[in-house]
Length: 53
Image (cartoon, one colour):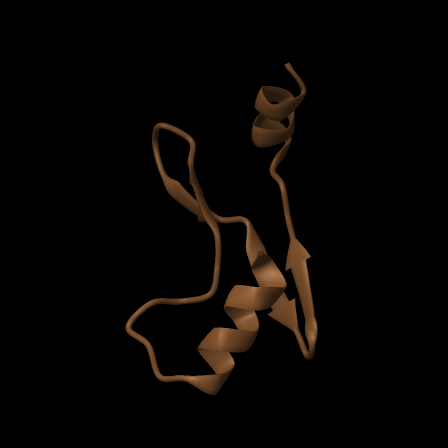
């Protein structure tokens, strides 16, 4: 999904960004990014704990 949205965003102008965000209850944090053609997911420890529980 990250790769698809990144590719579509790169090919077409859009008011949206191709990043994923996580709201931890206090702040909104980006949890994805691009490095050249690679799409990366960066999960904070707090989110990892939620996903693993």
